[in-house]
Length: 448
Image (cartoon, rainbow, N blue to C red):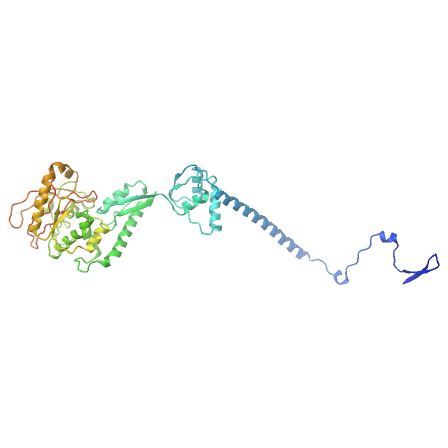
């Protein structure tokens, strides 16, 4: 609705209803009202509470993530930092210690700066690392200078410990092997049972400080079983042995008869040839084992009474093989027993050079014996004391030969290596199937 208004000049103007004067325009206006469709709706209090809760959870989660991330960053940064060691150091971690006890030991030894940082880093490395961290292992470790905590963890978890070795040579009895392991100061634990003869594989075995003696014996047993499984099927088909047990027994005799690897297959051939002909082996090491058993060392010379004594191991008195091994043979002797040389030799005697002279006939053998005696006579003045140093060499009278010839004087076997418990059969002499006497193995002279 509009009204007419007359101006002073007589002109009428129209004024719109509701028009405001300048003064009115300066006053604040009233806010428009809520649209009718929304006037009836009230905000949901439950929805607001949920929104506020979610917002709080997200805020707390963000704070926790920041704290965890910062802590992890600080720990891993500390891990990568060089450690406090100024020089390499050796540390022993005993068996049974947990990660916290190990961390305390490392901190006490000055290898790390903080045990809890070490434990936390170890756990974080397991959770966040690209590969799963193994348990920290016992052993003796050399920690390098300025090694970081990561380096220490890697060293202990990968088992990079200092290794010691025990060399157990061929030809020892099981009892002698046990005694050597007992004397090893870097091994631990008691050995209550001596393994059966011939079940241990001689070799050099490496171990960490504090390893169990029984663990080394187990490894030796496993080694022998694996070696036999590998080589038994490849044996020569015409051998006069029927089982693995007989093979080990035969190889143990070969092992004790010679210390030279290049002669073992020929020594094996001599004994196989004798077995095929029904001849007794007449091996002195079997006499020694029959007397002292696993002790291995006779401590004196073999006498005529020893040779004549009935014993299951005395191959001068029994036919065939003894009832079991007389030592633990090595792989070389086992291979020689499986693959003997192709010869007709029945005898062997020392040749004065550390080796042997092999013969097919008794006549050839007696000639080789005379040559050996000549060599011994020439060197007797300078080396007679050396024969006394070997407790396994001995003197035994030699009976008259089959042809009724003169009875030779007493002689003694070659000096074996220190690992050999015998000094027999530098030559093997035979007794025929009727037990007739023949010259016994030649032995080096021994001071009476």
